[in-house]
Amino acid sequence: MMNITDTVLMVPPKHFSFNIETATSNAFQNQLTLDASTINEQAHAEFNHVVDTLRGNGITVLLLESPSVYTPDAVFPNNWFSTHTLGSERCLFVYPMLCENRNNEVQLESLKTLLADKLDAHYNVVDLRIDDDSVLEGTGALVFDHQNKVAFMSISERADVGLARKMAEKLGYELITFTSRDKQGKAIYHTNVVMSIGEKLAFICLEAISSIEEKEHVEAKLLQMGKTIVNLTIEQVYGLAGNVLELQNKQEEHFLLLSTTADNNLTSMQKKTIDQFCKRLPCDISTIETIGGGSVRCMLAEIFY
Image 1 (cartoon, helix red, strand yellow):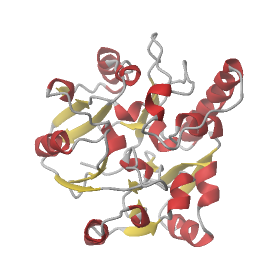
Image 2 (tube, rainbow, N blue to C red):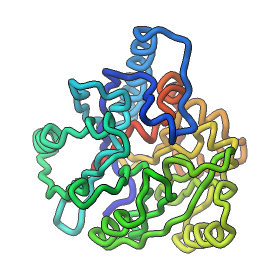
Image 3 (cartoon, rainbow, N blue to C red):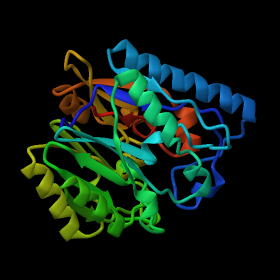
């Protein structure tokens, strides 16, 4: 299975607003003193800018309409599903999320129909929601390296170890767990805030991993996998510099999708390292990332087919 895809799925921010249900575990959410219509207008403009940027660089973007019910975080579809190719088999994993209004984002039949219509791709569904009451929020909780068959996970109330082990076992992946903490010492809610793995690059905030043993294990594994590490500070994590995603187009040109905020928080040396491997595509999504507490990576669900 390839590590980098040329196709992503996105969901327009139809009901986008500050999500009270998720705020207790997401330290990166912030309320803005703007009226609902202004927030909605700005979020749609930012969303369209990301779509145009991706398509303008030859990356395929599939659009799945937002559910009709109130789903303030539907713009972050990477949390409720992931796609995988295991030999000749296509698998679609569906994940249980912590909050009710996030579980309402799941549109399994609409997703299957879209993938069949647009890509002629049919998937075997593995629904992890029926396993137990555990929570595992997709590629927010799990950061995959598909080439090396490794899944990294920062443990939190949105990332259950037992369910992650079941998922990794189904894929035949090695699971590496650790705990990363924010400035207040609380477990960071999603792994993809502190970590991202591309073809040759790996972004990681080693500073956020409090256990020396876990820190050394994660770093050693990334180096063993042949990755060039971009080591982020906790301040850069708060600048969402870890919530990035490497993609490629049909010509196999590689790009790093990131927000303008994230790009501004990278040092010139870090940018120089990144630019050796892929072209940076910064997008201004300040409304979405400030209110939603997630950045560009969270907006993109990778499609492997």
